[in-house]
Amino acid sequence: MGASRRWRLAGRWGALATQGRFVDVPARGTIAAASVSHAVVADAQTTYLAGHNTGGQLGCGRTSTLGTARTVLPDRIVSVAAGLGFTCLATSDALYVCGTNLRGQIGLGREPGSLSFQRLAMPAVHSVCAGLDHMLVLADAQVWACGLHTDRQLGVPSHAPYLATLQRVPIPLDHGERVTRLAAQGDTSVALTSQGRVFLWGNTEYGQHLRADPVDRLETPTLLPIDQTVCDIQLGGSFVLALTKDGSVYTAGYGATGHAQAPYAQLTRLELPSRAVSLSASLQYAAAVTDAGQLWTWGLDSPDGRLGLGVLDDHRVYAPRRASLSERATHVVCGGQALLVRCA
Image (cartoon, rainbow, N blue to C red; front, side):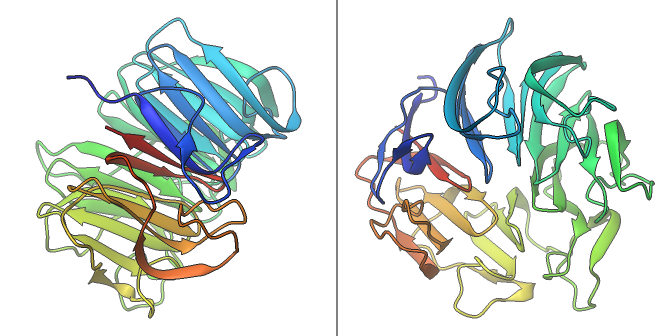
């Protein structure tokens, strides 16, 4: 049986506000991404986008305050990424980018941006992800980066404030080890390897580096001191989430860590009723799906109820609370306006 294509939404999809309840996303797809400005759902060669469009990130040829759009590519989409005012759609041999490029976020050199999708040829693309103002690409068994570099979130040996074309990120891997997953959020980047090891770089002022010494940033990819084998890693604006092989979730940093007292630079296990199978985080909140199909959310809610708890307020939820989702959840994606949940 193939992956489910049905997504549920809490928060906002363009002009559609859910009032803290879960409603169907007016699009189907197998993959999704979301940022503080917009959300993306993709299915085969078709992508559906919704949210703010002030930078042209919806790729519809114009700007607007809020909007929705649909784009069809000539090839199958394998990964999608959404940053602050920009979008990247990846096929096996190219990146399709749109939105702002004022800090080099979409790799278009000196062009200030594009209101429609532009094709960048790239071999063997595996995945893409985005922070606020930078983009990471896993392609041809290498990690590539472009965009803002003031916190060294690109991980390349350059002190330029930003890089407007994709540059290779040198990661000190062991023989036979490879990068399997990338994540970015805010001004921090992270890579997970086939050995379950985690390398992090960029902003670390909230203890994301898991070290007691007060280092504001890591200039190059640095191995995190995690004893367990990690199978997924996610970043918030000021925190890190790690899913280990036994289904446990650990958090560190500041803000939406799932604990009343922030663990800062020490990994602390999150109390969930069963094994976690999917994690996601945005700047100010996070979510986990358990093997029982339950969705748990925590952090800062929004006036549109992005935590799915039915409360319309900017209230803060310190410990994970079960969201009011009647369907069985399989995967979760957190964005600034929208929480997207794939359902079985």
